[in-house]
Image 1 (cartoon, rainbow, N blue to C red):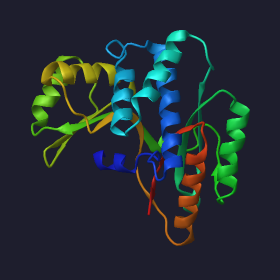
Image 2 (cartoon, rainbow, N blue to C red):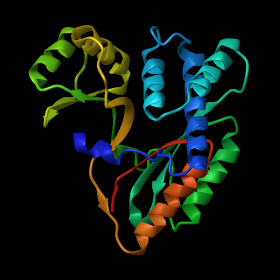
Image 3 (cartoon, helix red, strand yellow):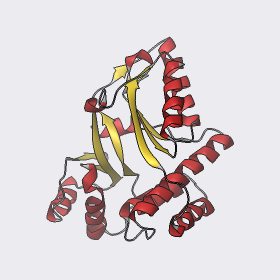
Length: 238
């Protein structure tokens, strides 16, 4: 299951314009996370992980600080999560996670991405059952038994621990994210996590080829252009 997270989501910057969009998406997510769970990363482990991930993706410090300052003020926009499901090119399964201040606008924008690429937006739950929702932590270590013991000692509900070529990947339910991260850092000290986030992992793959590959690339590019779209998960294998 661990290798499936490499298929995980579309948020990589390809150009300077795309970098600006990535910064904007991180800023929005940090703002929402800090506003709901507190602006102190030491007391809000989800926020801390988000900030660390933003820094690894080379988001400028001023973008992060601006989002935190905005959350401290208590004002600003109210963003709400919105999730859309459906079938992409080649009948692959897709989940689109958004943060929006206008659900009607966002639904229309996302639906257009589907319709313009011969895809079909579905109803809530139409493909969700074909994905696992997991908190995932990946870091360099060579003893999965020690990692598992540390998690179990902290009463963390562990789904799976994998060891591949000296890299440990831990999977837990998303509700265990903060507890699992705290248990790992308490036991091993500061860890340089290669992966530290909550994702949807496909249970299988849908192989696409031919014209569907180009349509899938167009579909993902269109979604990534939308400011409201935060993450896109899919089971397509090119």
